[in-house]
Length: 168
Ligand SMILES: [Zn+2]
Image (tube, rainbow, N blue to C red; front, side):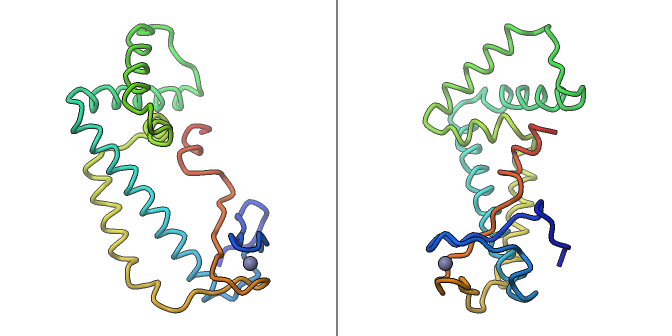
């Protein structure tokens, strides 16, 4: 178990609202809760990747446009947040297209703007991880020390992994 600091995140009960630092739980319970958390975030990533795939299939030019937008995010990251002035017209057009494609799905828009990935290898990777984890969450869930409900969820120190990429 990693040492506990305020940056380690906390466990929060969705039933009674209590929060608990990681060291509240014995190691096996901590591992169990983290496994479930990892599995849930992988399932969430898989869901975002499936929505990305559906978008690529619905619009023949979507892959190219989104890869260009993602390259920009990566370039900005590498150059310390500087955005070059050239290609502004093209950038605006690409942004507008992304806005149109994701107007009903702001979460997908943020995901596509904030991360860089190759769709097919990433799907294979997440699928493999999920299969490896599948058997590990069989024991009964640790319950909330305060209310006794199985409603504990892990809250990451940073909002989500896409955010981390954006903030560098
Ligand atoms: Zn509770």
